[in-house]
Length: 619
Image (cartoon, rainbow, N blue to C red):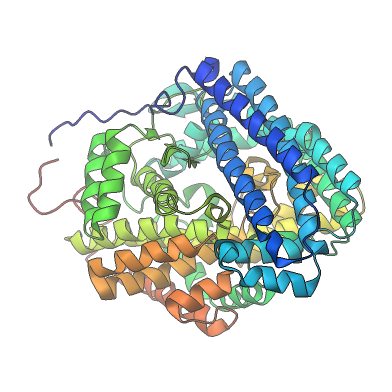
């Protein structure tokens, strides 16, 4: 294969030149300060509308808020990227503090505007919303009016905002810094290597069991050593959140994430109900895979293992070419987008120590770009991670023409785009599989996603529910956190997983995200939703790309229920909707067990490159 020489280190200089010492970025911070200062002055003279002729003032304020939000996103994404590539970058940490202070001022003014919106009389409000000038903002304005905290005064809201900037959010930053500073000694290929947490976690898919097992227990030892510190961080984050909710009159900790995901509780409950009814086929899959590896049940450190030993590595350039090739089969915009991402070095993929352990996508709305961060170790799992994050980036691309306020879409829909991108690769790989062995390899990787969404994510959800209930009564000890995690895993996996990491609460970063709790159930929503969308895409071919882009563009200005009804004509509060996606996954689990029961299957070696490339293509 021709070596194209794609860069493995991203280019941040064409966003702001000079990294954490960038004068260009300092100028951006100054502009932000001016924008927020102007907003403060404008809000100071902004009063509750009493007539429809005041709509211009409201629209101007809303547009200013959207403009600041876009500029803040640009700044926060840049700092996130700096600290991911170099977690000990003190200059970047200082910049983060400066931007946090500006963001705190912005949030105060936003709260004031929301209060004014809430205090507007209903007849005036309805008249305002009927005016053409407000057309683009009707959904977000109604959302402000419905969700505003009526229990706290402006002074109390401002005080909480200040505390969040320098206290609450700081715990999340501290967690990320602590996790990034940890190194792990693991035996790989007969040599002891000093790895980052991200590199050690990548060994979960290593073809040799001793390496997977060694990495698993090396990490467990680290978590045990530092469990008290991580328990303090988690308890402080949850304690602050619960106190704010109590003062705000929020009765259930789930109330906030459901609102943020623009989702009804009935939708979430219908989804989990269907998942609970259909876990048996996935337990059977785990048991069968364990038997293929010589065990009676699945050991946690073997879950990500390929079902056959593949000693091949896929190079980054090869991954870039195959992703572009398969994305091009879906549509021209997706193809052009992914070519630009690789050609312009939007991706940080270098496999090195001393970088963040967490893969992510950061959007830069001002420049219409994104940046993807991961550690590419040459496995099929790494290819899927890369594709997943590129899906997020394509969602950002789809939103580039949308105004500032409507660019922000809920996490549930965000995970739909990333999962959809994975489906493209899985489907292409399955079509090109030339043998049962190749087909099983791809099928196994796909089923891992189902298990993660139906069992692992469910365990996270159960743990977080129970943890918050106990945290209401006081500090939850590290030992108790381990018990809660172990019980949740046992229940969610139907007892089909051996030697699970009860320290999952330590190394799962989602629990430490201070923006919102329950950063879990939207993944499962996105997974099943993506299956439905992808089924439509296969029916319509390249013509569907336009519909897909329209769906993504609507994602920032509709509820989950309305979005699905508009673009798929489905009611997601009913179990029937979720059963359609579940049926696809169950068939795959049944097929895996059936195929592996045949006598003519060999488990020694699988060429996953062969399953991804066109016949005759040289690799």
